[in-house]
Length: 275
Ligand SMILES: [Zn+2]
Image (cartoon, rainbow, N blue to C red; front, side, top):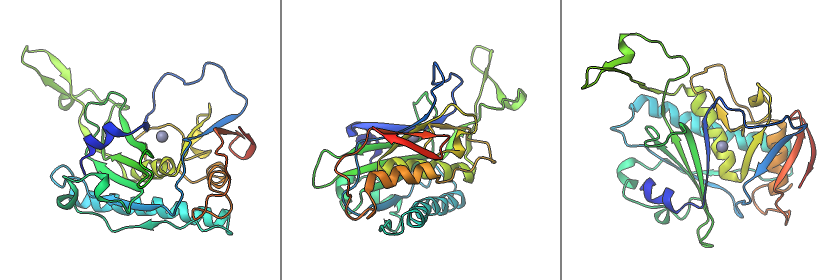
Protein backbone atom coordinates (compact mmCIF):
# COMPACT_ATOMS: atom_id res chain seq x y z
CA UNK A 1 0.00 0.00 0.00
CA UNK A 2 1.48 3.26 -1.11
CA UNK A 3 0.79 5.02 2.16
CA UNK A 4 2.68 8.24 1.51
CA UNK A 5 0.62 9.07 -1.54
CA UNK A 6 -2.55 8.13 0.27
CA UNK A 7 -1.84 10.27 3.30
CA UNK A 8 -1.23 13.27 1.12
CA UNK A 9 -4.73 13.12 -0.36
CA UNK A 10 -6.53 12.67 2.92
CA UNK A 11 -8.77 15.50 3.89
CA UNK A 12 -8.53 15.21 7.64
CA UNK A 13 -6.16 13.23 9.79
CA UNK A 14 -6.94 12.32 13.37
CA UNK A 15 -4.20 10.84 15.43
CA UNK A 16 -3.72 9.07 18.70
CA UNK A 17 -0.43 10.11 20.21
CA UNK A 18 1.59 9.73 23.33
CA UNK A 19 0.60 11.73 26.38
CA UNK A 20 1.79 15.29 26.20
CA UNK A 21 2.70 17.23 29.31
CA UNK A 22 0.68 20.32 28.51
CA UNK A 23 -2.97 20.06 29.45
CA UNK A 24 -5.47 20.53 26.68
CA UNK A 25 -7.77 22.54 28.89
CA UNK A 26 -7.28 26.05 30.14
CA UNK A 27 -10.19 25.72 32.52
CA UNK A 28 -12.12 22.78 33.83
CA UNK A 29 -15.28 22.14 31.85
CA UNK A 30 -18.22 20.72 33.73
CA UNK A 31 -18.98 17.99 31.20
CA UNK A 32 -16.91 15.74 28.97
CA UNK A 33 -17.16 16.43 25.26
CA UNK A 34 -17.37 13.69 22.64
CA UNK A 35 -16.85 14.84 19.06
CA UNK A 36 -17.89 13.30 15.75
CA UNK A 37 -15.89 13.49 12.53
CA UNK A 38 -18.92 14.48 10.43
CA UNK A 39 -18.92 11.30 8.31
CA UNK A 40 -20.41 7.83 8.51
CA UNK A 41 -20.39 4.84 6.18
CA UNK A 42 -23.62 4.39 4.27
CA UNK A 43 -23.15 0.64 3.87
CA UNK A 44 -21.77 -2.16 5.98
CA UNK A 45 -18.15 -1.48 6.96
CA UNK A 46 -15.71 -3.66 5.02
CA UNK A 47 -12.47 -3.82 6.96
CA UNK A 48 -9.31 -4.77 5.06
CA UNK A 49 -6.00 -5.47 6.78
CA UNK A 50 -2.74 -4.86 4.93
CA UNK A 51 0.40 -6.64 6.06
CA UNK A 52 3.37 -4.40 6.95
CA UNK A 53 6.73 -4.60 5.20
CA UNK A 54 8.06 -7.94 6.58
CA UNK A 55 11.66 -6.69 6.58
CA UNK A 56 10.71 -3.96 9.10
CA UNK A 57 8.72 -6.08 11.52
CA UNK A 58 9.33 -9.28 13.44
CA UNK A 59 7.04 -11.93 11.93
CA UNK A 60 5.79 -13.53 15.16
CA UNK A 61 5.09 -10.07 16.56
CA UNK A 62 3.11 -9.15 13.46
CA UNK A 63 0.97 -12.31 13.73
CA UNK A 64 0.16 -11.32 17.34
CA UNK A 65 -0.65 -7.77 16.17
CA UNK A 66 -3.00 -9.20 13.56
CA UNK A 67 -4.90 -11.12 16.25
CA UNK A 68 -5.19 -8.01 18.46
CA UNK A 69 -6.55 -6.15 15.44
CA UNK A 70 -9.23 -8.76 14.77
CA UNK A 71 -10.17 -8.70 18.45
CA UNK A 72 -10.60 -4.93 18.40
CA UNK A 73 -12.83 -4.97 15.30
CA UNK A 74 -14.88 -7.87 16.67
CA UNK A 75 -15.29 -6.13 20.01
CA UNK A 76 -16.94 -3.14 18.33
CA UNK A 77 -19.45 -5.54 16.74
CA UNK A 78 -20.11 -7.53 19.91
CA UNK A 79 -20.46 -4.51 22.18
CA UNK A 80 -22.77 -2.64 19.80
CA UNK A 81 -24.92 -5.74 19.22
CA UNK A 82 -25.29 -6.17 22.98
CA UNK A 83 -26.09 -2.49 23.46
CA UNK A 84 -28.56 -2.08 20.57
CA UNK A 85 -29.69 -5.62 19.67
CA UNK A 86 -32.26 -4.41 17.14
CA UNK A 87 -29.47 -3.26 14.88
CA UNK A 88 -27.13 -5.07 12.52
CA UNK A 89 -23.67 -4.08 13.71
CA UNK A 90 -21.64 -6.68 11.85
CA UNK A 91 -18.69 -5.74 9.68
CA UNK A 92 -16.89 -7.78 7.05
CA UNK A 93 -13.28 -8.47 7.88
CA UNK A 94 -11.47 -9.50 4.72
CA UNK A 95 -8.44 -11.75 4.73
CA UNK A 96 -5.18 -9.89 5.24
CA UNK A 97 -3.51 -8.68 2.04
CA UNK A 98 0.17 -9.80 1.90
CA UNK A 99 2.76 -7.05 1.55
CA UNK A 100 4.04 -8.23 -1.84
CA UNK A 101 0.51 -7.92 -3.24
CA UNK A 102 -0.22 -4.39 -2.06
CA UNK A 103 3.04 -2.47 -1.66
CA UNK A 104 2.67 -0.65 -4.99
CA UNK A 105 -1.12 -0.33 -4.94
CA UNK A 106 -3.46 2.48 -3.91
CA UNK A 107 -6.90 2.40 -2.23
CA UNK A 108 -8.50 2.57 -5.69
CA UNK A 109 -7.25 -0.99 -6.25
CA UNK A 110 -9.31 -2.13 -3.25
CA UNK A 111 -12.73 -0.63 -3.83
CA UNK A 112 -14.49 -3.29 -1.76
CA UNK A 113 -12.73 -1.93 1.34
CA UNK A 114 -14.09 1.12 3.15
CA UNK A 115 -11.96 0.85 6.28
CA UNK A 116 -8.27 0.34 5.50
CA UNK A 117 -6.20 -0.98 8.37
CA UNK A 118 -2.50 -0.60 7.55
CA UNK A 119 0.67 -0.96 9.61
CA UNK A 120 4.01 0.82 9.62
CA UNK A 121 7.08 0.00 11.68
CA UNK A 122 7.23 3.55 13.13
CA UNK A 123 6.08 7.08 12.42
CA UNK A 124 8.97 8.49 10.46
CA UNK A 125 9.46 12.23 10.46
CA UNK A 126 6.63 12.97 12.84
CA UNK A 127 7.35 14.94 15.97
CA UNK A 128 4.15 14.24 17.84
CA UNK A 129 4.99 10.56 18.39
CA UNK A 130 1.83 9.38 16.69
CA UNK A 131 0.80 5.85 17.57
CA UNK A 132 -1.98 5.72 15.03
CA UNK A 133 -3.62 7.88 12.40
CA UNK A 134 -6.97 7.87 10.68
CA UNK A 135 -7.62 9.77 7.48
CA UNK A 136 -10.88 10.25 5.64
CA UNK A 137 -11.45 10.28 1.91
CA UNK A 138 -15.14 10.75 1.19
CA UNK A 139 -14.55 12.93 -1.89
CA UNK A 140 -15.31 10.22 -4.47
CA UNK A 141 -18.93 9.13 -4.10
CA UNK A 142 -18.10 5.73 -5.68
CA UNK A 143 -15.46 4.91 -3.10
CA UNK A 144 -15.69 6.55 0.31
CA UNK A 145 -13.24 5.21 2.83
CA UNK A 146 -11.31 5.81 6.01
CA UNK A 147 -7.62 4.94 6.09
CA UNK A 148 -5.92 3.88 9.31
CA UNK A 149 -2.20 3.62 9.96
CA UNK A 150 -1.05 1.77 13.09
CA UNK A 151 2.56 2.32 14.18
CA UNK A 152 4.13 -0.75 15.75
CA UNK A 153 7.15 0.76 17.49
CA UNK A 154 7.74 3.89 19.53
CA UNK A 155 10.55 5.54 21.41
CA UNK A 156 10.45 4.87 25.09
CA UNK A 157 10.77 8.32 26.60
CA UNK A 158 8.70 7.96 29.71
CA UNK A 159 11.27 6.06 31.71
CA UNK A 160 14.66 7.22 30.53
CA UNK A 161 17.43 5.29 32.19
CA UNK A 162 20.79 6.95 31.72
CA UNK A 163 23.27 4.19 31.24
CA UNK A 164 25.93 3.38 28.69
CA UNK A 165 23.37 1.79 26.41
CA UNK A 166 21.40 4.99 26.12
CA UNK A 167 24.35 7.25 25.26
CA UNK A 168 26.33 7.26 22.02
CA UNK A 169 29.44 9.15 21.06
CA UNK A 170 28.90 11.29 17.97
CA UNK A 171 31.50 12.59 15.55
CA UNK A 172 32.44 15.60 17.68
CA UNK A 173 33.11 13.39 20.64
CA UNK A 174 30.01 14.62 22.47
CA UNK A 175 27.34 12.40 23.83
CA UNK A 176 23.77 12.39 22.73
CA UNK A 177 20.73 10.48 23.80
CA UNK A 178 19.68 7.58 21.67
CA UNK A 179 16.07 6.62 21.93
CA UNK A 180 15.67 3.05 20.84
CA UNK A 181 12.44 2.25 19.13
CA UNK A 182 10.72 -0.54 20.96
CA UNK A 183 7.93 -2.85 19.91
CA UNK A 184 4.71 -1.69 21.48
CA UNK A 185 3.16 -4.10 23.98
CA UNK A 186 0.16 -5.98 22.63
CA UNK A 187 -2.30 -4.31 25.03
CA UNK A 188 -1.23 -0.99 23.49
CA UNK A 189 -1.70 -2.35 19.97
CA UNK A 190 -5.23 -3.41 20.92
CA UNK A 191 -5.88 0.02 22.44
CA UNK A 192 -4.64 1.81 19.32
CA UNK A 193 -6.66 -0.35 16.90
CA UNK A 194 -9.81 -0.04 19.03
CA UNK A 195 -9.33 3.74 19.06
CA UNK A 196 -8.57 4.14 15.35
CA UNK A 197 -11.41 1.86 14.24
CA UNK A 198 -13.67 4.16 16.28
CA UNK A 199 -12.37 7.03 14.13
CA UNK A 200 -12.72 4.84 11.06
CA UNK A 201 -16.45 4.57 11.84
CA UNK A 202 -16.84 8.32 12.32
CA UNK A 203 -16.22 8.93 16.03
CA UNK A 204 -14.10 11.89 17.07
CA UNK A 205 -12.21 12.35 20.31
CA UNK A 206 -13.55 12.15 23.84
CA UNK A 207 -12.28 15.04 25.93
CA UNK A 208 -12.09 14.71 29.69
CA UNK A 209 -9.86 16.31 32.28
CA UNK A 210 -9.70 13.21 34.43
CA UNK A 211 -6.55 11.16 34.95
CA UNK A 212 -8.41 7.91 34.37
CA UNK A 213 -10.09 9.22 31.24
CA UNK A 214 -9.38 5.94 29.41
CA UNK A 215 -12.07 4.36 31.59
CA UNK A 216 -14.62 6.76 30.11
CA UNK A 217 -13.94 6.16 26.42
CA UNK A 218 -11.67 4.36 23.95
CA UNK A 219 -11.50 7.62 22.00
CA UNK A 220 -9.41 9.69 24.41
CA UNK A 221 -6.68 11.45 22.43
CA UNK A 222 -3.52 10.12 24.07
CA UNK A 223 -2.10 7.20 25.99
CA UNK A 224 1.12 6.01 27.62
CA UNK A 225 2.37 3.46 25.09
CA UNK A 226 4.48 1.31 27.41
CA UNK A 227 2.01 1.06 30.28
CA UNK A 228 0.92 -2.58 30.20
CA UNK A 229 -1.87 -1.95 32.72
CA UNK A 230 -3.96 0.30 30.50
CA UNK A 231 -6.64 -1.61 28.65
CA UNK A 232 -9.12 0.40 26.64
CA UNK A 233 -12.71 -0.79 26.62
CA UNK A 234 -15.70 0.20 24.56
CA UNK A 235 -17.64 2.17 27.15
CA UNK A 236 -21.24 3.31 27.56
CA UNK A 237 -20.25 6.68 26.09
CA UNK A 238 -18.66 5.02 23.02
CA UNK A 239 -21.73 2.88 22.41
CA UNK A 240 -24.12 5.77 22.88
CA UNK A 241 -22.12 7.93 20.51
CA UNK A 242 -21.90 5.28 17.78
CA UNK A 243 -25.57 4.41 18.22
CA UNK A 244 -26.40 8.09 17.91
CA UNK A 245 -24.34 8.26 14.70
CA UNK A 246 -25.79 5.22 12.91
CA UNK A 247 -29.20 4.74 14.51
CA UNK A 248 -31.01 1.75 15.95
CA UNK A 249 -30.72 -0.26 12.73
CA UNK A 250 -26.96 -0.34 12.91
CA UNK A 251 -24.59 -0.08 9.97
CA UNK A 252 -27.01 -1.22 7.28
CA UNK A 253 -29.12 1.91 6.84
CA UNK A 254 -27.95 4.91 8.82
CA UNK A 255 -31.16 6.45 10.14
CA UNK A 256 -30.70 9.90 11.56
CA UNK A 257 -30.39 12.55 8.89
CA UNK A 258 -28.43 14.82 11.14
CA UNK A 259 -24.92 14.01 12.37
CA UNK A 260 -24.32 15.89 15.61
CA UNK A 261 -21.08 17.82 15.93
CA UNK A 262 -20.60 16.57 19.46
CA UNK A 263 -22.38 15.15 22.51
CA UNK A 264 -21.77 15.97 26.16
CA UNK A 265 -21.36 13.35 28.89
CA UNK A 266 -21.54 13.41 32.66
CA UNK A 267 -18.57 11.35 33.95
CA UNK A 268 -18.75 9.23 30.81
CA UNK A 269 -21.94 7.58 32.03
CA UNK A 270 -24.87 9.78 31.14
CA UNK A 271 -25.54 11.73 27.97
CA UNK A 272 -26.31 15.40 28.47
CA UNK A 273 -27.42 15.98 24.90
CA UNK A 274 -26.02 16.36 21.39
CA UNK A 275 -25.39 19.54 19.42
ZN1 LIG B 1 -7.59 9.72 17.88
